[in-house]
Image 1 (cartoon, rainbow, N blue to C red):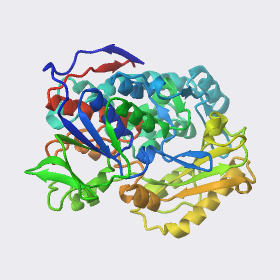
Image 2: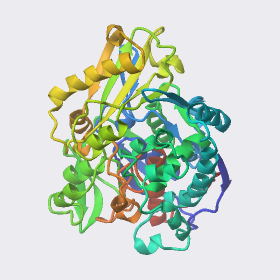
Image 3: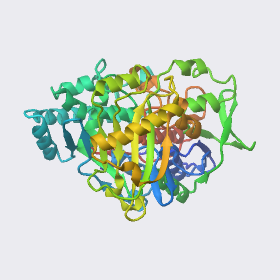
Length: 519
């Protein structure tokens, strides 16, 4: 929950009146920034290429079926609530939330685990499937809560260089980074059974990483779910950026859809505005880039201006995995299929290695299904439902012919429903179908290499080594979204918007209120 108000970060007493901020991109980071800055009196213009808000957190609508494009888990709801609260708004005035219990169902070939944020229920599940292992949950929650409490302040502020990373306010976080350990290795300290450790480590996929490579600090992602819960927003999570945009407009921001930005205007290493694709020049005092990082560096910067993030530098950076996805509108409701289900490949480690190490397609897939219509009937016409199916895949660094492979992956999904979920005739129920491959992500949503989860969160691309919120290449230029600090995933994207908005406010001497999150 949101707790005590802290003192304003600045004391100049002026508002943002007369200062213009341009936001490129209407993903969750862009619209959250627009809301925060507009509420502080800045003139805000947000330019979005698509005909809708949301980016990869948007929604598709066809024949009465609503499909989230990207995220489907809302973790750490208080971070979203805080964006609204610091803007003088209330999230519940714009969104309707449902807390899920059970949170999700996890399936191996020989066992089914139902995870709850009621810890006693989860311990009963552990004892039923892994006798004698439930005490590990108490250790896990206790130690990861301490990690979360120490690291949260580090995720709420910029890490603009090594010297600031070693400042007294951030030093307490360093021992909790688990340098040299992986998520799976960290979980094995709590749970000796490999399968049980996997049930608490799959969240590394939220970052587009393998649990055997993802830094150990991210073991706290599972803690955040088990201690703070998972939420659904009525109508789908695509309603979140739409709600932020509506609140931003209520505060005076101007949202321009179908308006692509061609490039930044750069004068003497200072960003002074943008040039739109139709040739119009729009000048501003600060520019926020919410476009995918790799795409922005490759397409939005005038030739010769980049010194650090050149094409050569981008080619050496590590990017997340991608996804094959099916959005299906079906003519029935599978009442016995939970809101969230994750099905592990029979040889999960091999499947992960094929995706992240060998960049090849898998014959034995893992897949995720969201059957949110059992919770939220607004997602489909009466008596029907909206299914979201995701299969992790290599990004476009893999030499895969997706025109051929997409047919193979689709068939594997149908087989997975039959063999792993007991749904024999999924195909006969399909009324609407939309397919995404890594090529779709790159070509239609401007996502570099089709890397759905943006830059990897390897140690060489975290904290001060990640592209900075106050972009180090140019003055008056700021980054938000998954490609900057603190990283990908909705909670951290909200924090990137808050960090960059505070930096912009500081640069203009504008007062704002900070609120703390109770941990």
